Structure formats: structure tokens, C-alpha cells
Image (cartoon, rainbow, N blue to C red):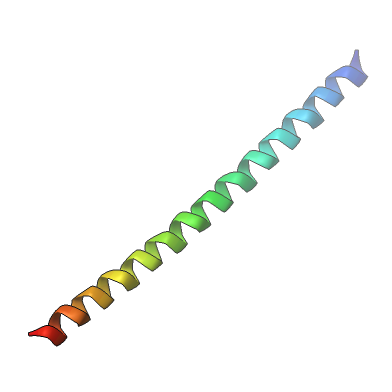
Length: 52
């Protein structure tokens, strides 16, 4: 019984670790997308200023 319990705890910790890593990857991708969006907006503002 104790072997089964420790195995379950290890499996749960592993699942939690994978979840944390996935959240980290998602956050870094959304941060990069946000930075790209800001760059695109600044470029759009520059192009608009150049035309006037």
C-alpha cells in the first residue's frame, strides 16, 4: 500500500511539474506576441507620421 501511495504522489508531482512548464511556455509565447504587437503598432504610427 505504501509503495502505491508513494508512486501516486510521484505521478502527481510529475503532472504538476509538466503543467507548470506548459504554463511557463504559454506565458513566454504570449509575452513575445505582445512585444511583436507593440513593435507593429509603433511601426504603424511611424508610417502614419511619415505620410502626413
